[in-house]
Length: 435
Image (cartoon, rainbow, N blue to C red; front, side):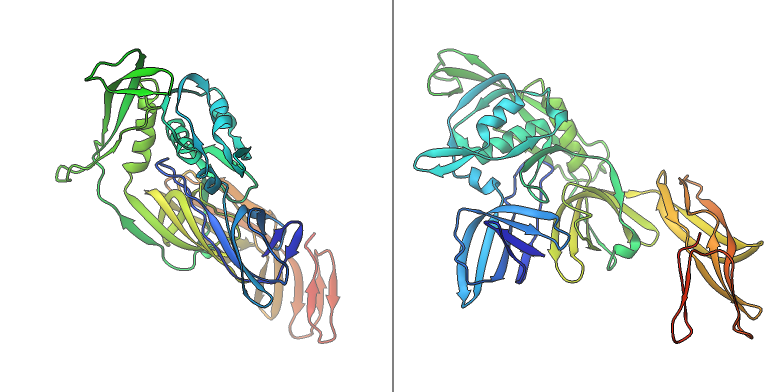
């Protein structure tokens, strides 16, 4: 890992801390950050970007430096935060929206304090799936971060501020990635929260006019709008009868209205009605990040799938991460058995427990087998086993052919089907790729 600041690369670093997270519910927008100690005599200033890269030059984070102090001679400690933090420094005026394009609303929202009373735009991208979405309702005077949170909440979007160089506003993706069992360090922890018996939102409509004494109203500073409220509730039909009443309620978000309330409730239900959370310790070189939907092995024959809301990384020869999955649920699995055969004899077999409906593609290995005074290297006649697993499981047979035949009594090597063979001074054979 290394850090780039003002076009200078710093590769001698230590005590790197990076734990990105996101919030699928839209109730918050976390300010992600990283901190690191850098060996340098350079003076590093606040108010510029620091970029975190891995050794393959992949960007992990581009954050604004909020702390840069010298720990000792030749060592600087920096702390950098995502641009979400800069949105806290700008207060936006109250505004009434009526069918405004979400992109136009975000253009007005994504600004930061540039000093001397000026504001600067913050780079962001909006997923194309939101291109036709409009915003209707009232926003009071609030920070740019608060307004972004409101807009994302009613859109059903989440915010990604990691492994990119801008703020990304994205839909929840239900495409699931299976984490191989050999990338899981230890048995994941499964936790359960209280049952949520329902989700409720308060919707709003506004009538411009002069409010009476008893009316609830809002104002953008020029016009007054009389507020009418409507309650929308979606009950959880899957909770046991003995569960205590526990309704998650969203009130005071004036962008909720009759047009979007049902979609918001459905989005909330998909997240709140699943009360399982899974914590898994994975080998994770940025293959699995917050925002992904992952399936992990909670045991060798127990699969759990959920949305990664956070990854606490640690760094060594490979990166590891403690990944927390929310709104998790058990997945139905089945066994895939692969038999590796030569001339009707089973040389070996492999067993996998995979989700039902999983499209598998498993590379067939070369096999080293000794029998009848000969050491054989067998090659698969097909490169991989592919298919879609059904609920009844599957058994696949892979046929093998002899690539090398070493007579252990005479030491004579019969080369049958290889690209190349080299023999070192010890007499060991190094075999090239099978043809």
